[in-house]
Amino acid sequence: MAGSFVRWCGLALCVAAVTTLALNVVVSPRLPEGAFATVAASPVYFLRQCIASIVALLLVFGIAGIHVSRLGRVGLVGTIAFVVAFTGQVLLFAVEYGQAFQVHDYALNAATALNAAMSDPHRPLAIGALIAIAAFFVGWLLLAVSLLVSRHFARLGPALIVVGLPLLFATKGLGAWGGIITSAVTGAGWFLIGLDMMRRRNFT
Image (cartoon, rainbow, N blue to C red):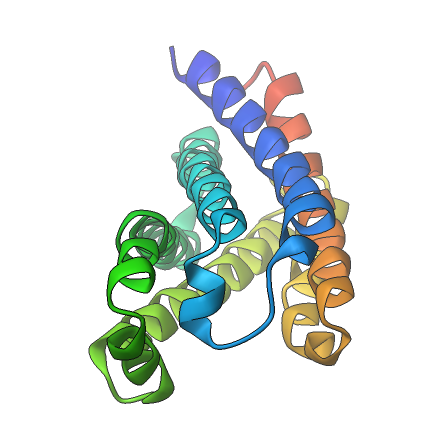
C-alpha cells in the first residue's frame, strides 16, 4: 500500500514539474501590465492562479510521498525538513487558491481597496503571502538538503532544487524569463525525484 502511494505521489511531482514550466512559458507572459488590481482582474490571472493551485496541491502530495518513502530512516533533521516543507506547501496552496477565487473577485469589484492593501507590506494580505512564500522556499531547501545528505534519492534531483530555488531571486530582473529559468531548473529537480519515486519498489 505504501509503495503504491509513493509511486502516485512521484507521478504528482512529475506532473507538477511539467505544469509549472508550461505555466511560466505559456500563461504568465500573457499577464497584462499595470496596477495589481488590473492584473488580478484579468482572465489570464484567474487561469494562472487556478493552474498554480493545482500545482501547489500536487506538490503537497509529492512532499508526503517523499516522507513516506523513507519512513524509519528519516531522522530528526529529515522530519523537521518535512514538517517545514509540508507546512509551507500547504500555506502556498492556500494563497494560490485564495488569489484565484478571492483576490480575483476583489479585483473585479473593489480594485481601489485591493491596490491599497497590496501596496502596504504591513497589511495582512501581503504578510500572509510573504509567510507562505518564505515557508515554501525554506521548507523545500531544507528537504532537498536532507535528501542530499541522506542519499535516499539520486543526488541530481535535490541538487537542482537547491540551485533552482535561489534563482527565483537571482533572475527577478529578467521578468518572464526569470520565471521560466527558475521553473525549468527547480522543476527538473522535482521531476527527477518523482521519477525515482515511481521507479522504486523497495520503501523499507
